[in-house]
Length: 303
Image 1 (cartoon, one colour):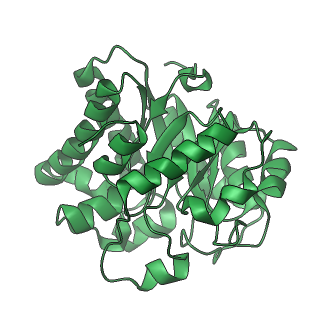
Image 2: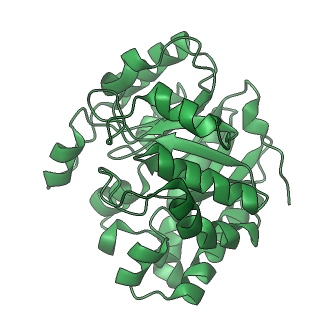
C-alpha cells in the first residue's frame, strides 16, 4: 500500500465534483439521508457510481492531470449509517467496498498520471452546521472505526471533508495517525468566510497544526465569493479547493428544492483568481451543485 502523496508536488490534480447533488438532481438517483455509499450494494447503484467517477477521470486524462479518487463514504459513519440500517460490521464492509471500487477504477483507467485513493470522512452531524459538537478526543474515538476500515483497504490517505469545527477535524487527523495513514482536512465556510462555529480559517488551521498536522488543508462546500478575501497570500498549508456552484448560503441551500448549478465558466474564473494569489492550490474539484462540466472548466477544458 502506497503512503506517498504525489499531489504534494506542484502538478495539477483534479478530483470529482458534487457527487450527491449530481446523482440526485442530474441523474435521478435516490439517495436517502444524502448518502451515496449504499449504492455499492447493488449492480445498478454501483454502475451509477462507476459512471460518475469515470467521466471525471476522463477530464483529468484530457487535462494531463493527476486525479484524487475520493471514496463515496462522506455519510458512512455510525450515526448516519444507523438510520440506513447498517450495523458496525456491515458499515465497515461498505467502507472497504467503497475503496475497492476506487481501486477498480484506478486500475481500469491505467492513467499516465498519478491517481490517489482517498477514504472520505464526513462530519458526524449536518455538514452545514456544528449540531454535534465533540471534543477532539471524542471525535477521534467516533471516527476511528471508519478510518480503521480504510486502513484495511488500499487507501493512500484519509480526507476529512466539510468539517465544521477544528475539534472534529483534529479528531479525524488523530484517528488517521493512529491508523498509520496520512490525513487531509477540509473545512466548510459560511458567507462570512469563517467556519460554522465562528472560528476563522487561519485559526482553525493553526489549531489543528499545533496538535496533529495533516498533510495539507482544503476548503469545500462554500462558494469562492464567501472566502476569497480570507485566503491570504502565504497561507501555504492550503492546497485544495472544492467549491460550491452556488453563491447561496448554507441555510438557503438547505431550503432549496431545485439545484443551483451556477455558471461553470464563472466558477472556473474564480478558481483562476484564487490560484493566482495562492499558486499552491493545485488540488481542484467541486462540491454541491457542481458536476463534470465545472471540473472541466476549472481544468481549462470545454465540454
